[in-house]
Amino acid sequence: MKKQNLFETLLKRIESVPFLSRKVMNFEVVFEKGEKYYIGYCAEIPEANGQGKTPAECEDSLKEAIKLVLAQRRKEVLSSVPF
Image (cartoon, rainbow, N blue to C red; front, top):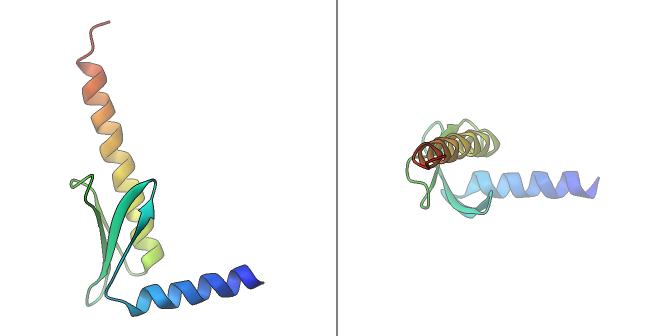
């Protein structure tokens, strides 16, 4: 029960600030609150960004974008390695 309350408190705090910076998947990411949506981006992976109506949706979207970019980078690197 305490974890639920802590999560709700953190979520309210996130929704009350115009941006938030924290680690996700060991990358530093930034979430900003727009007029209707949250946007998220990662300095280490500029090709990846996410958006969502809530901070959680935005984070999920950004995680998926990061995974896709990293998968593509792996594919490109492995295609250049002679076997």
